[in-house]
Image (cartoon, rainbow, N blue to C red; front, side, top):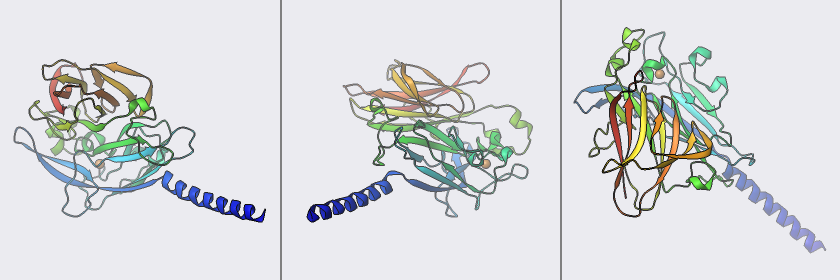
Length: 336
Ligand SMILES: [Cu+2]
């Protein structure tokens, strides 16, 4: 009897130790710092445009990134009681900035359900001299988000102050899943972020309340910071192989409209399935061949590459905000 009692005590202690270790591995706190640095980019016509980009490399001589570094936060299954916590810190040391009243920067976690104090909006009291922004995503916040500066947004967003932020499913052991949501049907072999943005070079030199900001005439049309003007020079590439599931996260930081499609080398549109919209799973996934992505919107889509080798071109046709006329198409490339 005594032996059994001792054994069970040992088992209980062992179980407690195991639980303690498991709990430590489950919920993560992600402490990530970014600062702001200039970068000069030579565009396809040879013109140089100055951007302000976020980077996690805050050394004095570093350059900003366009878009900023990926921020990924775990999202646990409903009912697990587990949450990851993101603490995203804006380090303002050596940041390029405008004169008052548009001095300083913030980070707005676009689409994330956060308290006003974490929202990075100066008009509702957010400091512009650096801060830490906290997001604890709920179980339904699987999908693509973005972070961006919310000071004089018309200028600072255009300057490149944005980056992708992902609410990515984790299992209860705290391991990231290669899925768009907690639905196993969203499993993928490959995933890429397609950050959509546009550039009106006049906005990059104008400051304050310049009348330049009264109109928007974009000249460059980007996917993840690159122009990708032709299928031969795509903005981003993926070597996927045949019969693979490819997920693309469409993150609309552009200031015009955009239509996304996936076409083969002959220009035939290929079907893809939309699983999430604006950082939430769709109740019913939708399969389509053309998807409009408006400024601020995000969609996560999946397609399966064919069983024979070839090339498809995921692409975005940017369109005039007022009348919908096509402005330019930016291409990606997936080989299989
Ligand atoms: Cu800013």
